[in-house]
Every structure is written in C-alpha cells, then in structure tokens.
Amino acid sequence: MNGFYDFQFYLFSLMAVVSALLFVTRRNPVPAALWLVNVMFALSGLYVMLDAPFVGVIQVLVYAGAIMVVFVFVVMLLNLGRAEISDLRGLAARLGAGIVGLALVANLLVLLRSRPPRAESAPAIDNVVTDVAASLFTDYLVAFELTSVVLLVAVVGAVLLAKKRVTS
Amino acid sequence: MIAEALIVSALLFAIGVIGVLTRRNAIILFMCVELMLNAVNLSFVALAKLHGVAGHVFVIMVMTIAAAEAAVGLAIVISVFRHFGSVDLSALRLLRDG
Image (cartoon, rainbow over all chains, first blue to last red):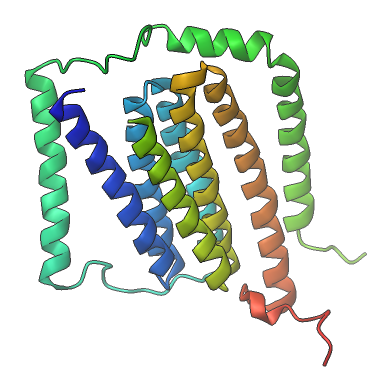
C-alpha cells in the first residue's frame, strides 16, 4: 500500500462520515438529501478503491442519480422544502468546503500525472466485471430473475398507492 | 484497507440508526434507511476482496431492492400526506389510546 492510496481512502472515508453526520442533523429535507448524495459519491469512490469499479458506477447511476432524485421529487411534490439561502453559512464552513474541493482537484492532478500502483492484493481487477457478470447470470440467475418480478410488483404497487382515489 | 472500510461501514450504519430513532420526518427516515443499506453495501464490497466476487452480486441485488423499496415507500408517504396533511410521524396516532 502506498501513501497516496491511503490518503485517498481516508479522504473519501472522512467525506462519507462527515456528510452522513451533516445529513442526519439537517432539519430541512432538501439539504439532507443533497448531503446524502454526497455520502453516496464518497462511497462510490471507496468502492472503486476496493476493486469494485462496476459497483461504483452503479452506485452513482442508481443511488445518486435515480433514487435520490425520486426523494427530492417527492419533497417537491409535497412542498416540504423551505427556502433557505444556503447550507454553508459562515467563514469556517466555506473554508472547509474550499479545502475539500482543493484536495479533490489535487488528487485528480496527481492521478493525471502519474499512474499510481495498485493495491497488492488485487490479482485480477481488470476482468472483475466479467466475473460479476458470470456470477450474476449463472450462480444467481434465479435471484436475478426474481428481482425483475420484485421491480414489476413495486412499480404496480407504487402507482396504485400514489394515485388519487376516484370516487365513482 | 478492509478493516478501515468495515469501520467506516459501522459508523455509517450507526449514524443511520441514530437518524431512524431520532427523526420524525418520514422522508428523512427513508433516507436514513437508504444510508444504512449503503453502509451494508460497503461492508459487502470490502469483504468481497476476501471472499470473491459474490459480494458484488449481493450489492447489485441490494440496490435493486432499495430502488423498489424507495418507490413503494415514497408512494406510501404521498398517500399518508394526502390523508393526514403532514409527513410528521408523530401525527400518525390513529391506533393510539386516547
């Protein structure tokens, strides 16, 4: 393990935990949802560092991109969010946000300059997607197919629950 | 790195439990449940480094079920809001005595 990897890992871990704490303490649902999105982005970084790049991509697409949008959409639909100026008030919060942003940009620059060595305990990271697909479509095929049924039932149930009662 | 990832996972799960126990807003409660699912996903991915790729498959399953759960749960929240005019869980006291 090299120092860069460790630094990156601890940075993403810290981001995840601090964002989660801020998420739990927000009163307004909209900033809470955005902090939760931040947790999910940090977690997807952790997934990539733990040799699970496919799961990291799915995390961004499904969790941060789809599920949280549904949450924010419901907050908007029910008109629960209150208009507030910003979550970051005061100099210290702005300074902290700036430092985190600069650290992430510095990370990107270092990654562009040099190809960091991988963790030694990662034998075949390159075909991990192939392994996941092979496992998903052979060993866990029944669970995979049942998942599609679960999704169908969930869609029908959601429409049925959320539609307005029509009194005939 | 596996031990550190498990510690982070435990911390995130604990924060999610604290949120579920202390918050009264139904939507934030659902988000706390999502946070707990994410914490479990992190420990799955960390342990997949030791025990093979099945952990990743479990994570994909958990994400699918989380999407279904969010859809149905939020539909229930909308229905509750229509009925009670609020998503405050302490307003749901139909079964309470007195």
